[in-house]
Length: 155
Length: 155
DNA sequence: TTAAATGTGGAGTCATTTACTCCACAAAGG
DNA sequence: CCTTTGTGGAGTAAATGACTCCACATTTAA
Image (cartoon, rainbow over the protein chains, first blue to last red):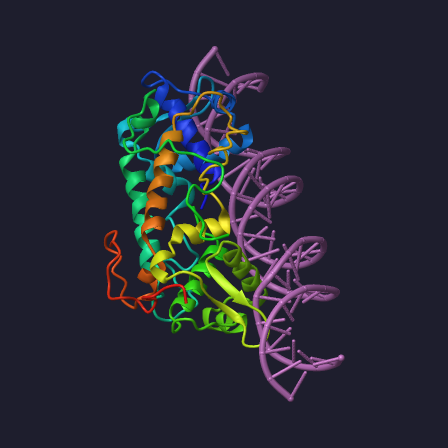
């Protein structure tokens, strides 16, 4: 249950772009430095975003990247899918080709519900929320502790 | 964004145990066969569940595993933590030791919110929901139901 | 007391995926 | 043209995930 670095990098880079004055471009090497992402890897990340239509690139001198849509219209869902494609929480989720069971297994419904919950958040969170310095992302939970703040039975 | 097989196996195995008549045990090799999990790997999975206090094991002839709590009291959250520890969606989530930025980054709030959403589902989903043939996972279905076959827990 | 059936512990191996690099090339502009 | 930008994709390295193995401890029953 972990997000890939590629996705994280993509988000960071888009935030960077979203903070630029409208229409301005940022070069790969600038984004790389400011977001602390390896240059050559970032190049690959950005290509995904270009292909997905989230940013445009211009070549040659004074080239670079810029958002193709207003920040309020770029959702995390779009970014996720640009980087990873359709979300599948377990191997057998949609394709079902290697599902170990012929009939639907008991947990299928939970995985689906879980994915929906995640996707809902991804859909409703836009770059605009992230670009703002104090994002008002209701319901965030500041609790944090080292290991499981949920009691383990016995043990 | 994917759940590990270990976690999936753990859930399947617990469902298997939850479907047994109260107090009955199942041996490793039986669970392995019925849930299609490699035996030697399952052994490791089960040890995690034992350590976490979700199941008890008995050695020797006629030994095996059985639930230590009624299915309605075993949440997916407990299972998750037994297998994976505290959830961290991105590398820098709690420890923050390798966070690339000194001040909180823009997306931290979303990751936290996301984790909360997932954990909420994990907390409110119990083994009882999965053991039932037609799980009604619609809402957070508070404890109700005809006394499960664990009416008087303890055993 | 022995033997067989069970789980335990953990080191070790194999496989897959993730993260990242490199380099030749194409487009744009001076 | 030459430099500066991104592009494409093959290739490599590192990390993690998935799984195996085997010696050992415990329990029960012959």
